[in-house]
Length: 325
Image (cartoon, rainbow, N blue to C red; front, side):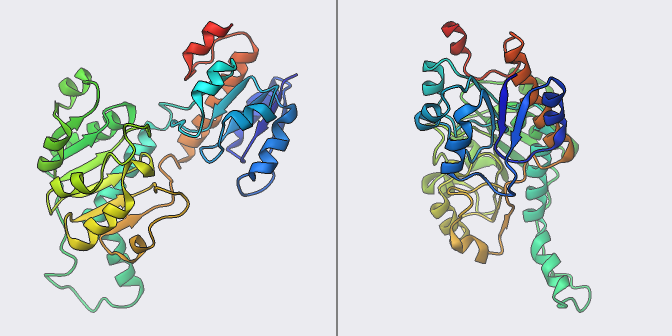
């Protein structure tokens, strides 16, 4: 029976599915990521691995895990994986799209509201006993209804996020490498270039994968194009935003505020971010709902079972690997 390594404990539904097939499953027993040395040691006799986004899957990984035939990444993004190297070696790579669309989109809205209405600083104000009574000028924020929403990346999550704006009667602009005609009809969203989106949007939410083209997609130039009243939300990948430039923009008032769930050098972040009251920071919990994480667990297992039962994994990323068969 196939030997499977799960590099970090996940919701058990997917694990139970693998066990029901009689697979030999080893789970990292620690409440932390495996060290590089531990990971490379544990994959030596494994046929499949369920990886996390913090696990670097590269040539060294494949050299150590010579029996590994499929890597099921417990994430939608797969920038932690060298796809070219995997494909060259005939190794299948899968991810977990769709099951976390709602969770991540909802969290982006959570950040947007939290920044716009100063929820975190107001909460702290209450907890520290500073509230002495109603004040007509206390924590004035920004309304969302009727404003312009900019969506950078109109893929599955971006589309889900944008659809949620319909109840707020917003004008929706989007920028992507490809047009999304469904979004244009259903929301409706307007396809514009990035500069136009940055200049005209009141709220901007990022939903792109991390690639060489999107790294520092938002840097000093782009931040200066935004309205001084604008709010930037990032639930995609940290390096899409130049964090040093963002700190400068927040400190000097180029933009109104930011909501972040991801960081350029996770788990580290620019220290000054934590000192600013116009930014809300979360610890990469975009998909952290019971429903989403359960779906991710099951999808990882289903991809592995598909492979070992002779089917094409349902969310195969590197489809070119099929030519290696």
